[in-house]
Image 1 (cartoon, rainbow, N blue to C red):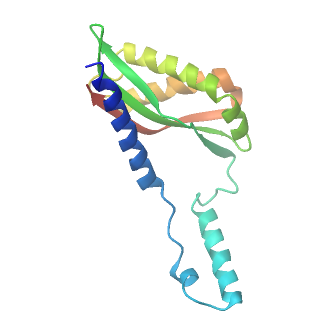
Image 2 (image 1 turned 90 degrees about the vertical axis):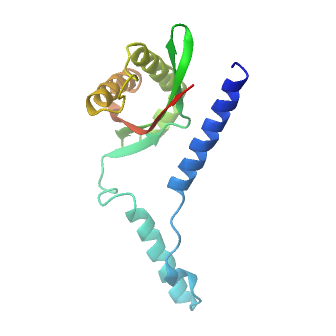
Length: 171
């Protein structure tokens, strides 16, 4: 079993990475930009493509007071029962922060990850990931706990913790 766990974790990471790549792949350029055109038309098509890319961030992205800092790696939380790991929960998290403060988030990411892991372990030990762990009330309790933890590290620049992915794998 000890030799099987690293293989399972590697396959799980590979599958989650492939899934994230599939979901987050860039959109293809518009057909107008792909066809042969004179230099003026190519420049106009390129400008249209750039404005569409900016527009994909949301209708009010330029006027928003928030930035989103995606934490680089997933969080893996073992669920222990009777002294043995019986399941793993894998989470992807992002932070909603004041515009222009993402570099501060990434600078403090090791501390944030440490504090988040402790909060996630506490939540798991309290039974938060048992049963229907994605039920609205349980997810809100998890988000509130992580937001409190984020504010402890980052202060008032953080407004919300977004759970962008969650999966439980029974071992």
